[in-house]
Length: 396
Image (cartoon, rainbow, N blue to C red; front, side, top):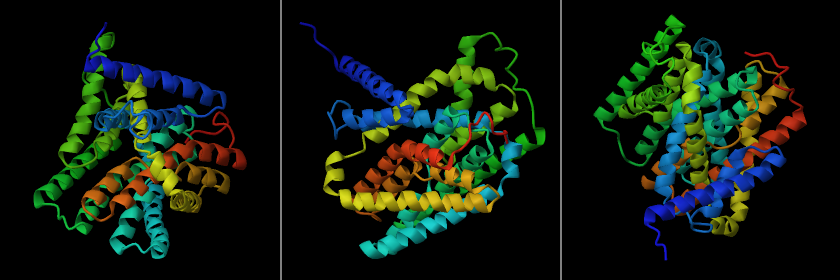
């Protein structure tokens, strides 16, 4: 009789996960739906609320966080910073308006559900953040990341990612935890460093990395250097109390400006596919089917309110800043879901005792469901407003 070690058992679980993803993905591909849905559904089936095959949520989520870092690094490599700066009004004012409108919406809902003011503010923060991971991957899959509406949406997403830092600080204040002078000082220094790098990229516009020519034909060292650059920038921002994903994005912009994008993409593309898939699997593992069935009415109420409000608030903001209604409605659909960074806010609010265990579980379910529904919502909106093919759209 062959005895399997614990490690062998984990290998079997990951192989089974791959088989389930392939099976679900094949069905979804037939209906032209993105693989993101397959990853989330696989997490639901194999997680502790499903067949209980994958139960180490911490390990899976940690691997998924690495996927998020790689994804934002790739996003940065596709962004032209000068073009992004030209459209600063949309992300700056658009995101602030979205946050204010989200808090107002939750205030109305909170009045009906007897929520406190701290709870309303935090939940308003949570629903105001959209998913960079889902939206940008969909834009890339549809070759829309370089279109005008794609650039507008990406710029808003990036501003939201930056706002997570002050939101976390406010969350700590509302929970009675005041950040230390050292923590605030580190974040300020980190912000100055990021701004300095951005100014350098804007002024130089184009430069060469010192090791580019040396590594031209060395595949193995290319992979190692690519990892060092990506993770190095992530570590830099993390050490200063900022988002590691933000650092990866800035690192990607540096690579874009250095005109070394092609071999960086070749080196890391396969890793990105695997780890981004694990990120969405970890989200699926959070969905508690029993909780969902028991509380389906309030889940449906909040889910509907979030999608309708986020969609039309963002559409109105994008339209105000010069986009036609057709593209604005499509942009609103892209930003209608709640993002992965909201999990961090929800967790912080729960441990700060701002929200109860029930509210935390409800928030996790709603966030997860919005991510799951998002591709369908976007696809449906795209058909209704009849968005033309990106091939016929002029790049930004």
